[in-house]
Image (tube, rainbow, N blue to C red; front, top):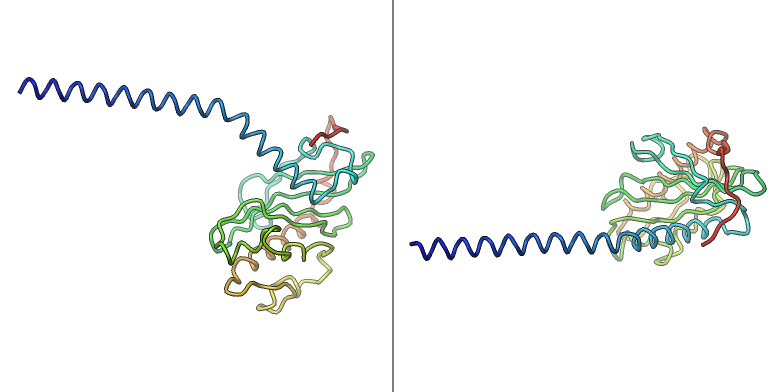
Length: 216
């Protein structure tokens, strides 16, 4: 009996030791990789922003010239939404809203919606989603050209009735076997345009310390 207890004690000590070592190793790896992961995320974000708003069109730092706004109904989330502002010689050029389409087939779809000062869409990009591979993932720019169909559109083009997928009587294509996903994205982009129209001057309110240089 004593031998059994001794064996169990040794096993427990060994297991506890391995657990402590494992937890420490995971924490160390996280500490070492966290800066790299953060830098990669920042670089990916800046690439997406520059795809929508090319560097030649502005002279400020998009990731520093930002504002936080809230509107669960039009922006798709109760959380603060980041808006990146592009300016040229201090004049507003484009606002890029990081919004949610909350009703995607696989869950919320995170979008960057770039709107020029005049209310026209510069473009839209999907930056995160869980839609079905081979069906709903056609919203990605590298999967199909569908997402490019928003460029140049506005609240008046195509107008309220047109801001739906064709199955619902609108002007935007749906995907074969997947209508929920494009329907959610179209609705989110339309809502982002509505929010922009209502808050344009607030969105472009200057920062106290604007930055005028940018490095990718």
